[in-house]
Image 1 (cartoon, rainbow, N blue to C red):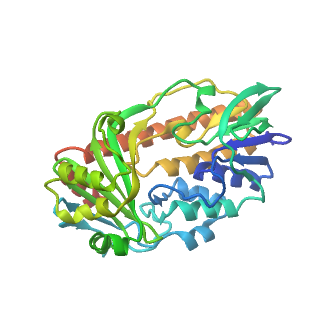
Image 2 (image 1 turned 135 degrees about the horizontal axis):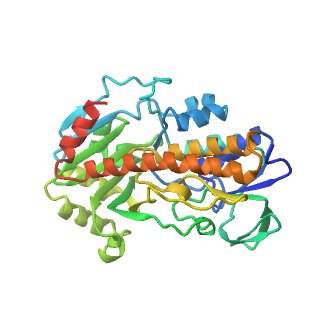
Image 3 (image 1 turned 180 degrees about the horizontal axis):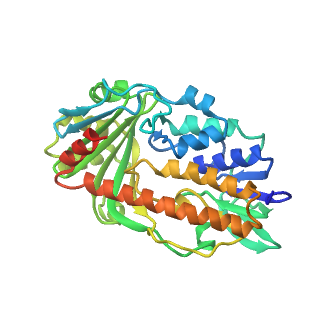
Length: 386
């Protein structure tokens, strides 16, 4: 096996990094995960994830974690409402979509990020994850790399896997290709205990998801298993809007005023979100890598997930691609079909870039559909045909 007597360092303890560690440990590889969070109890940010057949669910099966996944996913959380700015329901699949339909290629079970992370952590050998490891730099040493962390520690690894997300600090060691701004920004908010703090929206969402469109603007909402509600105001704007807007994202009153101005023609019920959201709001400019990105393969360094191919979230493919990357990379590193690590990693990277380009293209196209004057009609047509 190519990884025999090799130490592997995965930088980043998101779904992709943890999944890769699990799959490599099943093949008895020597692997550590270096994660900047202080411990596993750090609050996991972000909306719930829907897992897809052919990618995320395939990796979960290969990791022998399907039983655990079934225990932690949220039946019915993938059910969708499409509404207009007046909160009038124009599409629902709550009555027609089954809560459980594993094996159906269109079934996309939802799981919150925290339970997914804990499921993967619990599957790893003790002390696999080295917490409080904020990557700073690395330099070549022998056949591998010496990694340096903010806490003053340094470690050697024969193979380094960058799983450190969209703002990867390791990616520049492999390529100088930068992500491209999509023209869309998503302003993230969270309402804790939505039953009390956003009761009208909580009643409308029915523990599922809402896409609301009107006046060339939209709101995207998802219920979390904790009873919290995550939402995004998504709109076209300049890349530097967050700094140029003059908004204080920690000022609840100011942010509510902004929403009521920008979404002036929307039903007042939506203001419940901004009035009761935890602060700060998080502005997220949406980026994607060039569809034709290329780099020269190294025998001791590669990428997965957002570090390799950050993409818009409008097809739900980001986390699924990261998990599929982990699956494919683990197979390449532990397979006997390649004569050396360069060959194995090149095969993985070639397939990964092709796969990611297709997912990115779909995500960009969906983003276009969702941010036009005809967004409501576009999405009604899209969901009615799927």
